Amino acid sequence: MPQAAVHRGLREKREKMSAKILVIEDNPSNRLLVKDILEFRGYLVIEAENGKEGIMAAGEHLPDLIFMDLQMPVMNGFEACRRIKDDPRTRHLKIVALTSFAMKGEQEKVMASGFDGYIPKPIDTRELPLKVEKFLEKGV
Image 1: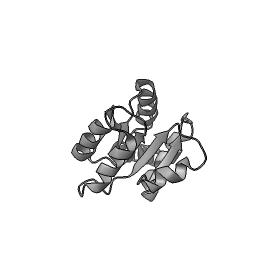
Image 2 (image 1 turned 180 degrees about the vertical axis):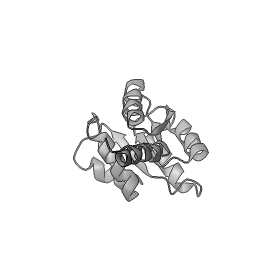
Image 3 (image 1 turned 90 degrees about the horizontal axis):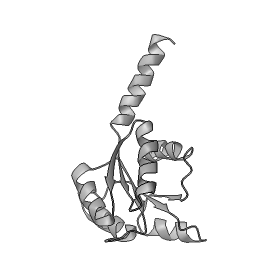
Image 4 (image 1 turned 60 degrees about the horizontal axis):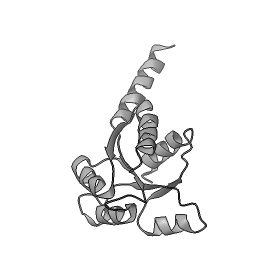
């Protein structure tokens, strides 16, 4: 492999590694799945188990992207999103809903409530990294 290609690959991995992604998900299996996929791709992953923890983590870490479940104990994703977007320190953060809501009109409801993106569950493990790159490149 040419030296330039090796350096380019290392640079791309370093750039990804600097991208912080907060995963707010109460289901440990779903959280682990998303974390493993993202870490394998070189992203730094921060975890939270509910909306309240997610708000605190968002303010502390100011991640480049947030994936948030909608149905969680303590505080649901809709309320957590609203509070993150209402805070001047965190309102610029990109929040993508991870949801099992797949009924007609749900995506529109989610987007209208302040989320910047929507990914239905079950999560397509091959598509998730591609969607992450698009969210990070475009600023959602």
